[in-house]
Image (cartoon, rainbow, N blue to C red; front, side, top):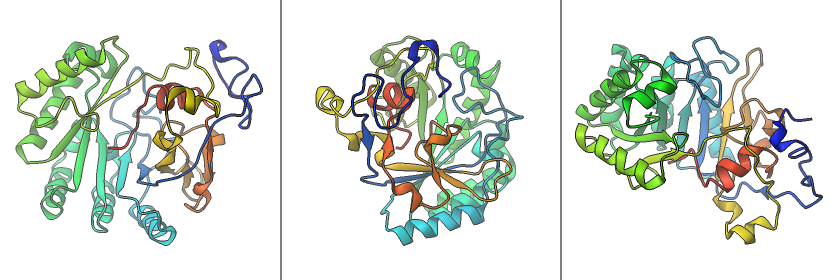
Length: 315
């Protein structure tokens, strides 16, 4: 049985049918655009509501290496996925000592690269700054850093990430701005603001600091719905696509997969979803060939975050 809250008791148990016996919705890998690499769950901070439980001590997902990344880039070509983007997430990616080399490996093959970062001390180390400057100059327009700014108000951001976090992230963003890096923002919807109010607040924040980020563009200002396991959510059946006027091709697992390496494992493995790193049901196998199977939407996050929330981790 899955470990679900009382609100979803009895749901999300069978990958083929929902709790009322309806056919569960599945998603084919119809247009693989993004391959994600989780560089490791270690992070320089511990947030109050981190879905992956990243922290300075959580090494459940260990560091990937440049050799690992190159192996999967080879597989991308062998499988002819036609992906356009390589994403790096964590933890904090810049904790990984091979982050610059892994980024170079992806950029050198012509991919766009998206790095999710808090833009704090790991990114601001001199060796990392030098590497980023080199890559941004060598591959103009190909590298984007998406910065986690949970809220445009420092006090609310710091409630999630710790006292002083906002100012440290702002320092990193100003360095990126001054050195011509392309930036995006990841915010969170847990504060109860409307979408319009959130985007207006971020717009004022961007204007104040001279950040060239469009608050109205969902790919530049990404506002993630909160993934609260205590909230009741409906299961997604095959009939829901028509009811919601939504295509399974719009859901994140139609266009992306994520590579992780578990602590103690001999090799990395591929997951169906960036949001479910610890659920064995969504582990597909060590090769990209294994990851071409359809994905059953058998988790509350599938409903709340992806289908009903309409969110995606990719640019």
